[in-house]
Amino acid sequence: MGLKDKLTELKRNALEEINDAKDLKKINDIRVNLLGKKGPITEVLRGMRDLPKEERPNVGSFANKVRDELSNAISERKERIEIIKTSKRLEEEKLDVTLPGVPVKIGQPHIIMQVIDQIEKLFLGMGYQVVDGPEVEEDHYNFEMMNLPKDHPARDMQDTFYITDKFLMRTQTSPVQARTMEKHDFSKGSLKMISPGKVYRRDTDDATHSHQFHQIEGLVIDKSITMADLKGTLQLIARTVFGKEREIRLRPSYFPFTEPSVEVDVSCFKCGGDGCSVCKQTGWIEVLGAGMVHPNVLKMSGIDADIYGGFAFGLGPDRFAMLKYGVDDIREFYLNDMRFLKQFSQRG
Ligand code: FA5
Image (cartoon, rainbow, N blue to C red):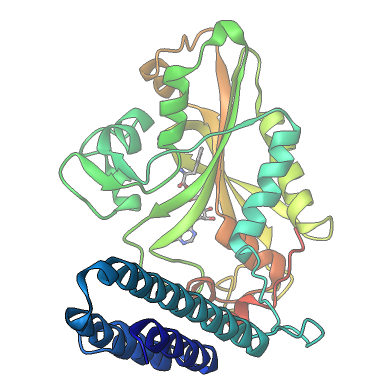
């Protein structure tokens, strides 16, 4: 048998073997055996030594052609095996869209956020702006600009966590008053703002006190604001959040940054006013402090206190949430027990 015939037969057998290959290992073995240095094609080419010189180019180019054809056939088969493999995998991974899905747990705003949102909506509706302030605050804004110079005895009521001599964790949202007043351009109209956020105090935790809680500051500055405006606004907040059935009362109080000052109490949700452990037997729970902005505070923020005046308040959304939903311990809000938190769907 001549070399060309040998090559033709080799090609026929090899093509059959290639087309029968079922996996990548097999096709790889065929490639190595057939086209490798010790393979049959190399063997045939070696036999060319014995051919007459004039026949060698003809047989040589035929052998190269056979090698190329087999090499292409191997690549095509390999591709085909890969396609089959992928489609088998897709077949296995087929998704049954009729199967019931895994339920997605949809969260909800924290109960305190619900109260804050409700109060924000009320004030946005009355044209107030909502302002943010830093929680790590300067002593200058937290105390001094609020008419509490260093060594003022009223600083004791709001001891806090100090970062440095200059910076502290703010004890109240009131410093946002000063920050906003400093920037406000009164030629463009009155200032009406609220500022919700976290505050910190070195208070001992109990049923109604936490060392970290929330406040919403409110401030209105204009030319003819009176205590009646303040009272009307406070009544509106109480009615919006608690409904008409709960009573509020205003008590004279003292804050260095307001004069006169009041503290506002809401009748206790648990005893309805008779006295119990939640309200410390008083029948009332204090929810906010307020008053008419002290002239010193206005002056320090560059406002003419002979022309302008206003009211301010600072309310505690944690206490509001306790009263609104009948929660008898403020610490429940911070324990992150989902069984507790899940009870309060969005009702704001
Ligand atoms: C103040 O913080 C004043 N800055 C409020 C204010 C603003 C008065 C503007 C006048 C003008 P007070 O310390 O009373 O005031 O706190 C205000 C409210 O925060 C309280 O009525 C109460 O609702 C809440 N609060 C105070 N301490 C705590 C505490 N430890 N845990 C939870 N809530 C608290």
